[in-house]
Amino acid sequence: MTPPAPLDVHHLAELARARAELAPKLYAIVAETNSLRATWEALHHAGLFPEPVGRFYAAVRRYGVDGALDALFVPERLDAIRAFVDGPRAPQLPRVSVSTLANQFYCEMQVHLARSHSLRTENAELAAGAAGHAAFEAEAEEITPEEITRAITAGEPLELVEMPLVAELHGVRLVGRADRIHLEGRRARLVLEFKFSGRRELFPSHVVQVEAYGRMLDANGFNTDRLLHCVAVLPRGRKVTDGLAAQIAERALAAAGEGLSAVDTRPASAQPDPLAGLTTRRVDDEAFGLWVFRHHRARAERDLAWALQYWSGQRAPVGTGSRGKCKACPFNAATLCEAAKAPPDGRYAVKRTEGRYGVLHVVQPAVARR
Image (cartoon, rainbow, N blue to C red; front, side, top):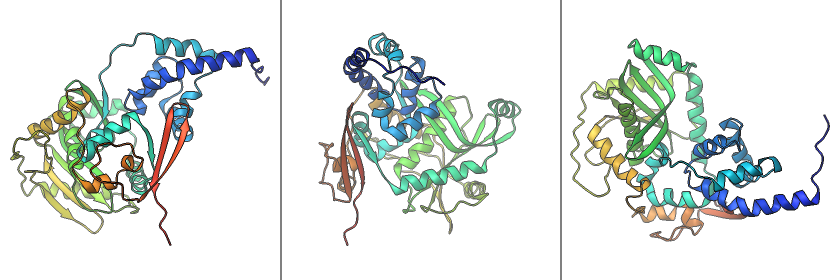
């Protein structure tokens, strides 16, 4: 293969001028997309990144967002980049992932700051969770969309792993992938979400996440009258054995058979508390902790409506009132949060790298002193 001819000095200077002019505009557009998937969709549609979405994720993991965008600046793409940043773009609904929405109930200010600052955390719990979810996904057999449609139409039972869901709610495009969903035709029976943590506890964000999947199923025409929500918490680093997910689902259905109320008894408030008035069944096992509760459409609608008001621009972000959360917050450690209720506790080490499009903050637990 003949190597490409090197660029002359004139072309290199032209490329540098174009990058200096267009790169800030390109990054500003990317910063407004809220997610890597939405970024790839925009670049892919404009012909700037024709490769599949997996290639884009791989480029971001290897080179960061800065490096992935910088690689677009080659002579043959300059015209397309200019047309993309200077041309009209059809207005699109804000795109929000279910996991991001759930995180608003931990600290909405963290979610807000992540939209305007480049920060990467190195967290053992996140890595353990990714490994655990991958192990559960490996248990499942592949099924095509056509097979799913046929089974739903025929009213057959289905257990779907990593089921993608999309719904437009309150002026926002909500997207997510549920760990496990059990269907009988168009009747949704069970939403099961796995969490890997050292704390066997049910948190508000867990409740909102499964509520969102239930509300999205409802918006997609599934019957959720008798839908059951389940959150299973497993220890970090636990080896996942075959059939464990099926065992957890079976225990959840048995617990629900004892009777569960779906009545919402929470008092009215500006910011809802997903745990207040929630009737659950708790199952404790050596391998996992399990919380089971009924789907309540009005409850889910109330929690989601409050969270989505932020994305539709109806209100400003609300920070946490917990000093403990502020002390452990990576954005606080990186001195990016002006609403912090307490100084960072020093458990994080921060490394700042100047990139072409701004500062990358890498936050990780500090090395323990000997």
